[in-house]
Image (tube, rainbow, N blue to C red; front, side, top):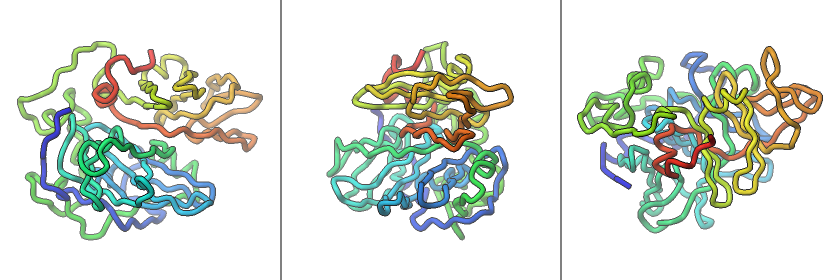
Length: 322
């Protein structure tokens, strides 16, 4: 693992006192990371805002109490992951270290200074070294889908007077215009991957395989020591539905117009429905929410949504559904 300091610590500021509302500054097609709760409105965290902050320290009301969570986003890896931020019974708060590990965000906790690789949730240095954060179920979808599926949902509001290195041409934080051009647009549209591709430097990484593009969107599942990444194009090529067993857990992975989603598989035998959705057990199910027309709901699984090159960095070249 190659760990390096790229920008100063906290030059990309985490959001530690998030506020929510119903108005959004971006576009319908913008990706948002969605966290649902049985006892509170769903929350959307737009990547348009996360580009400049990468971490939101928040809390989730799950009906049995408040669960501290960290909503995390690494733009270079397109890795959108929600973690519980309790370690060994201690509540921690995360910030952006300014370091990268294999082109992935390195977070640090403000309680001990320990450093954590964002894509795996593993502590790679410090008091908590070797510990792993618990992944929470979350979905990556579009703002349009979130607004349609969650009419009572709320969205993260842009922090006031924010400054971030991501808004700057150098390492010094600059004022953020959340409704302007996004800092990683060129990177997402380009062929390369990692920091070198983003900065246009000569030390670009190589990619040997031809069956997957390094920036293929993958949904990664990991249970009981087994890790399988489901590339979005492969799920779509399979008709939009893949069933598999990962670490003893039966899963169904559904590809929709807005992304890719994983749920516990109840064994219904899902088939794509003309006009949208998936038919199973005498009703139609929404692949983005897991909700059926008759009111039933699938159980969303904890997952990591990220680029293929990062999943391969973390789990090796054979850890993909084929």
